[in-house]
Length: 355
Image (cartoon, rainbow, N blue to C red; front, top):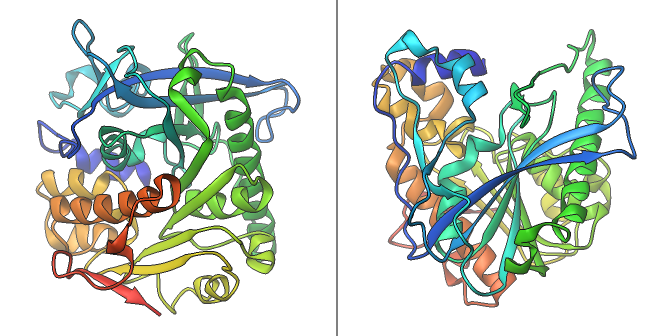
C-alpha cells in the first residue's frame, strides 16, 4: 500500500510540507546505531540490530548549511527515479546546523507499520520550532526502506502471517522489537555529541498506528518516558492489561479512534495518570502522517483519497494536530498550562473530547 501512496504523491510537483509555526531554527542529523546485544529479529544472518535515527533540534544558526531532504538519497532514488520529472519535498531542517544554547526536552517518534522515520515530519518540525529535540526512529526491516551511511538499503522483511493466530503473534513480535529499538536509541542518546542540547530528564514519545502502540508499551517498560501520545493506533501488548500511571493522549480519527476500536475503550479505563481522548472530525487513519498534505497536493479525486486521509483539508488537519500535540507536551514536559486539552475550543471545532 505504501508504494501505491508514494506513487500518488509523485503525481504532482512540487510537493511541500507546511512551514513550522515556532520561532526556532531547525537543525537535523542522521545517526547510525548498532545494538550488538541482539541479532536482527527479521533477517537471519544479521548478527547485530542496525538502526537509523534522525535528531531534529533547535539551531543557533543555519548559515552555510543545506536544507534536509524529506527522505535519504537512496530511498528517494527507489521511490522517485531521476527520469520521473517529479520532486519530493524538502524539509525545513538544515543538515548539521549548530544547536541552539540550552537544554531542551526530548521527544521520541515511532512511525506506522511499513513507514519510515520521515512519515511524521510535519509534526516533528513544528515541535522543534517550539523548542523541543525530537528523535525519529527507523525500525529496520519493518520500514519499507532504510538507508545506511554506506549506501546499503534495508528492505521490509516481516513475513506475512498465514492465520489469525499467526497474525496476533506477529504483531506482538513487531511491538516487542519496536520497544527494544526505542529503548536502545534512548540509551544511546547520552553518548552523542548533541546530548548537550538534550534534557533527558524530560522525555516524551509519540507515534502513529503501530508507533502509537509502541509508545504505550515503551512507557510501560521504561519509566524514563514521562508522557506519550497514540495517534490512531490500536493498542497491543501487556500494557492493555497493566495500563499506565503517567500522562497519555489518545488522538484518533473518526473512523478508528472511538468505540469502533475496543482497545481504546479498554485502555481508557486503565490510564491512571492524566488522560485525554480526542477525535479529529473528518480524518482517517493516514491523516496522522505527512500523506495528509502530500496526497491533497497530488490533486487526486476525493473518492481515492478520503478512505486514506478523510475529507478534512490537509493543511487544516496538520494545524489542528500540531496545536494539540504541542499543548500536551507543553503541559507534561514543561509544566505549562495546556488548557487546550481540557475542553472544546472554538478555535478548533474539529476536535471532539471523548468519552
